[in-house]
Image 1 (cartoon, rainbow, N blue to C red):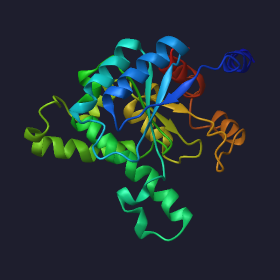
Image 2 (tube, rainbow, N blue to C red; image 1 turned 90 degrees about the vertical axis):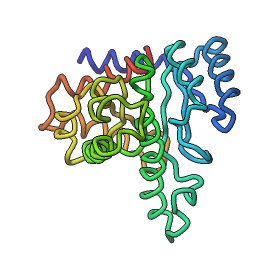
Image 3 (tube, rainbow, N blue to C red; image 1 turned 135 degrees about the horizontal axis):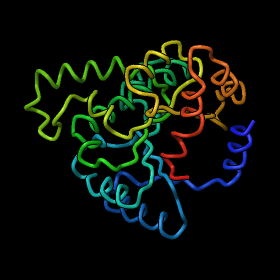
Length: 239
């Protein structure tokens, strides 16, 4: 159909995405600017591993400001690398580490970014959290809301509940096609915040079956599926 043909045509004109040197925030700003202006990059991967501070720390404010000014996507990406930073060295198998370290490291930086009010302070920033699914969000935002309500004095840059900030933001989160509570998460937070990712070429990628599975889900409307599969990613990357 028209959607499939348009998807294939747009996918054939790929745009580059780079990885930034986050241990050196000012160099990261310079590389962000260079790659965007000289090479047309539309997004950048921010690794959750190997950092001594959270990504909401003020030392990264210039990076967020420059990304907002340039209109490029900043994509925080889960990883099992440096898993000992989040306790992964206490586990025994690859499966244990892979299952645990991705969300653990991501939640660390999600907490830092949201409690420091980054989406509200940089309202035009294109920000995404990728690679750990999406249905953790209702639970974790509820937990963050509780801490904000009881200890807001510790978060002076946060002027509203984290869940409200999420809803009002343009933040995107990648999803897994088989997540059983996906409809509830979309209903609670809005389907404009979620997008499908193929996960190619990772060892655990289920493409193209995961694409077909999402499109065939009976518990999602066709309009929502189009947003998840195409429109939200198109907006995030400015395609």
